[in-house]
Image 1 (cartoon, one colour):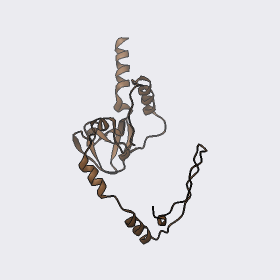
Image 2: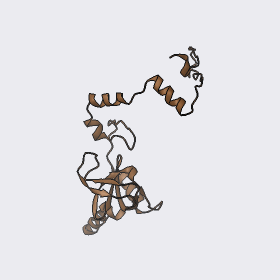
Image 3: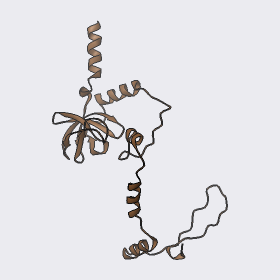
Image 4: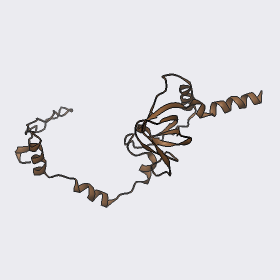
Length: 177
C-alpha cells in the first residue's frame, strides 16, 4: 500500500507531466530564476516552441531545447487546450500554496517590477536628472502640437464628484497658464 501512495505522490509532484505547450511571442533571455538580476542561461527565439511549467509573478518557467529557465510572462503564450491536466495542477497548487495575508506587494504591472526588484530599489539622483532632460517646456509643446496639425481647444473641467462647488473655468493653451 505504501509504495502505491509514494508512486501516486511522485506522479502528482512531477510538474513536467503537467507542462503546457507554448510559443515564444518575442526573443527573450532564459534566466536561472524568476528575476531580472538572475544569471542568463541563454536566449529563446521568437516562435520557438516551449513547455510552460509554472508562473511566478511576472515570470513563466519554460523548457526549451533541453534547458529549463524563466522568461518574462508577456514573452510567451500558452497554446494549451482550455481544459486538461494543467488545470488539475493549477487547482492542486492553488489549494495547497501558502498565503500570507499580511504581505503587501506594490504592483507595477506585468512588465514592471516584481517584489524582489522593489525591495532592492534605491534612489538614483542621476536617473532623475536624466528624466528631467526629457521634459518639455510649454512653448516647445505648443510648437510640436501646431506642427502635428493640432489646434487649441477649450475644455471645461469635470464637476467635482462630491458635489462641492469650485471655480470651474475652461483651460486652453492660449490662456497664458
